[in-house]
Amino acid sequence: IFTVKDNKTSSFCFHSLQNMHSIAVVIVPILFRIVVSQNSPFVKIPQGDLKGKYFITRNGRTISGFLGIPYAEAPIGELRFKNPKSANGWEGVRKADVHGNVCPQNNLLIPHLRNITIGNEDCLYLDVYTPAVSTLINVHIYFEKMLLITKFKMGIKYCSSSDAIQNTISY
Image (cartoon, rainbow, N blue to C red):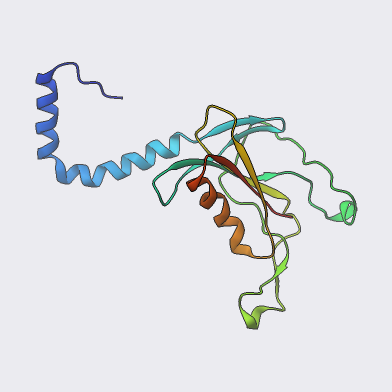
C-alpha cells in the first residue's frame, strides 16, 4: 500500500502518472494479475488446508471459490454399490482452483450425442463459493442434476446476488 505523506509528494505522483498514462494502461492489468494470483483465498478444514481462487461476478463483487473438494471416495472397485466412504484428508495445501470431474451422464442437449455417456466415476466433489463475511450467514446447497453446465454457473450466480455461501455438489 502506498501512502502519500504530504501535498508536495501527492502533486508529483499525480503529475508523473499523467505523463505515464499510456504505460500504466498496459502495466496495471499485468500487475493486477500477478497480485491476484499471489493472494489466493485460504481456508483450513478438518481434511486439510485449501487454496482457492477469487472470482469477479457480473456485478463486480469479489467472491472466494474453493473448487474440487472431495467429500467421499470414488465409488469404484470395492466401493461400488456400497455406502459412501468419507474422503481421506491430505498433507500440505491442496489447490482448490479447478472443478472436480463431472459424474457420468448422457448428453441430453445435443440430439445426436444422446447415447454417448460423458464423465468420470471419480466425481464426488463439491465447490464452495463465499462472499467476504465476518459473521454467520446462510448456506445454500445446490445438488447438480444431469446438466454438465449447471455446476459451473450456479455458485457464482447465487453468490453475486446474495450474502450466502453457495455449495454445488456432484453426485
